[in-house]
Image 1: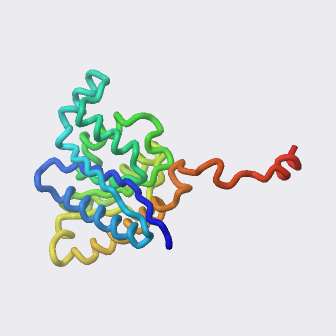
Image 2 (image 1 turned 180 degrees about the vertical axis):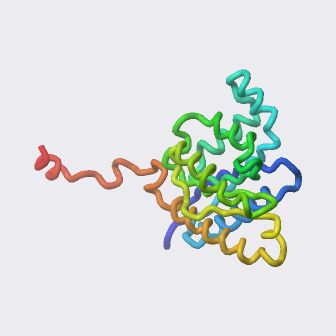
Length: 206
């Protein structure tokens, strides 16, 4: 019988209103990722980080260099995550300042090799390319492994007419993230003693 393992997913949502379509999309992605992982006999622990709740803490951190309690908790959640779902509204053709500030204060190499699913919301589909020219380069710079499918939700996508197409994209991106998160050899989780080089091979190489 295959034993189940657990993986942690940090869900970072940058919506400024409450409720917000950004949080709605984040919840859909988190639920789809949970379903995809369970099909792989992996249990998901979801840590949801609402950036609007720690906006003042982020400003204080920029000024003092020290994260307060709630921000420290959020940063720790990302640091221990096996995968990250990052969702932002699009303002002026890019991610919001609040979203960028959070990833600015994350310690160097925290996301190196970490699977990340990127997503965004906006009032119109004209902003969809921001995922490719703004978010994907940001996480590539942070050395994350960004899943191929990025998910964009415009206002009309949350209505009855567009919900099916959005659900298809959500499920596809979630499966891609689950494939990476379920793989122990992703995100620096390779055990160096898992497949040791035989001693005879070492001698031959010398």
